[in-house]
Length: 169
Image (cartoon, rainbow, N blue to C red):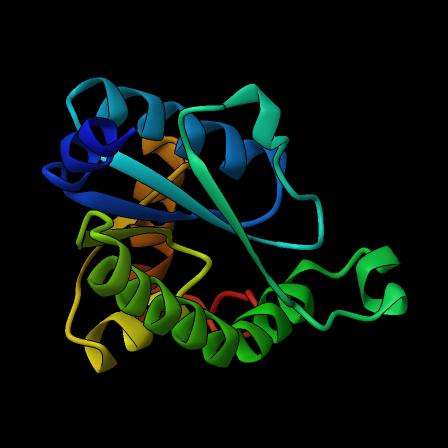
């Protein structure tokens, strides 16, 4: 048991945070599997809404943070308020969770956190990572065509061709 603990502590830990929808959770867990095969310890932070199934990834650590989302908001079809409130509600619990993880790594010889890998829609992670002086990287789970489309829309808006309502000038 002691040797296993020493072995695990020599590998850096990555903290993964996905938007709680299958099209975001699955790619994040797939990335975690690849990184785990390269020697990283993986901890997945997730919200109560649509949480992953930890038994499917027994080699990962899973930690839940509260999202404080109402049933009314969860059942609504409007994605932008959902994502905005999720980001507003999860920043403080995420920071508290990271602080506990850092404390645990010091006390129990757990692997140190090397980086936070977060979904582009979970943008609160970037501010928290900067606050606690951890590296972070964004995982975009959307396709290349979505990325190109976004850039084209932003370019058209900047040129005044599109207005905020989407009509042309």
